[in-house]
Length: 105
Image (cartoon, rainbow, N blue to C red; front, side, top):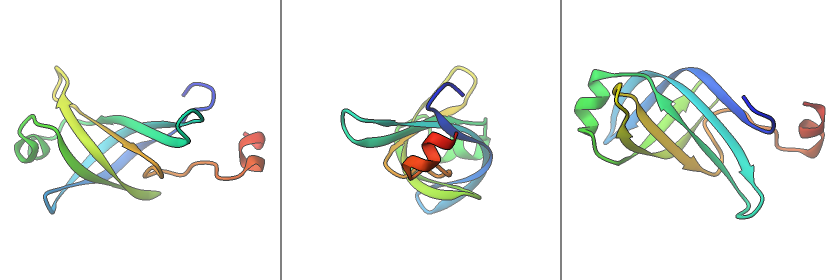
């Protein structure tokens, strides 16, 4: 991860239209001072079940990891069938929430 970037790599559950799919994710995020929001994004490992549920379209989804849960937006899959997901505000992973935590890292 680059300087100032936080993230999570590992198992997750993606919920689409009330259906849960076990997946692996690679998520990253950063605080954007211009708009005052935390932006997070990443890729979801190839999942045939997710592809069937989403059908290559943009869809809202919930991502749950062992560290948290957050709503996001699924977008078109890449060439290898991995969906991108992005969200704004609290991410589904742990982030620094105090100045002391930021300065410690």
